[in-house]
Image 1 (cartoon, one colour):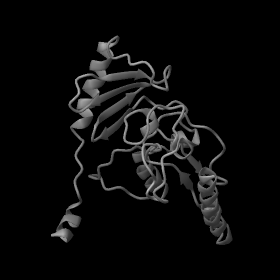
Image 2: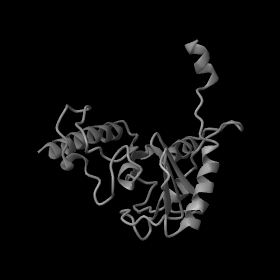
Image 3: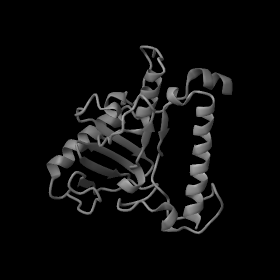
Image 4: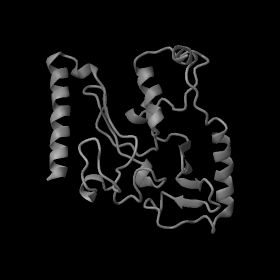
Length: 217
C-alpha cells in the first residue's frame, strides 16, 4: 500500500508539471530528465515522508547488490530517462554515464559559453543519449565515498576501502550482481585499476568559489 501511495503521489506531481508545460506551450521546448543520485536505502526509515519501518517494498535495489551508502551497484547505479517530444526518439542507452555528466550536457544544450578556465568532471553526454555516438570510448567512472572509492573502466570495477587492505574486483559485463570477487585471481587487473584510481584521486578536491567564501567572511 505504501509503495502504491508513493508511486501515485510521484505520478500525480510529475503529471501536473507536464500539464503546466502543455498549457503554457512549452512542452516541445522542454527536456525532462528523471534520475537519482543513489540507490534505495533499506536499513532505516525514510525521514522525507515519515519515520516508517524499513521495507524492501520501498527501497529494494534487486537484482543489484547493496544499497545507498555502499559501493556496490545497488548503491551507486540508478536508471534514468530523458524525454523531449520532437527531439528525442525512443531508444535505450546502455553506455555508462555519471551524474556529473548532466551539468555539461544541459549547459551545452542551453548554449552556455563555458570560460576556458572552468573545471568540470563530467562530459557532454548528448551524443550518446541521442544515439549519434553509438560506441563511446571507454572512460573512467569514478565514485569517491567516505568509506572508500570505486573506479569502473570498460566493465571492470575496482572497490578500494579506506583502512582495509583487501580490494574487490568485479567484471560487471559478466557479473553485474557482483557475486564473484576476482581480486585474488587477477592481481594485474587490480594494479592497473589502482593506478587509474590514484590518478583520479589527485584531482579529488572540492573548493568553494572565491566569491562565496568572501560572502561568508
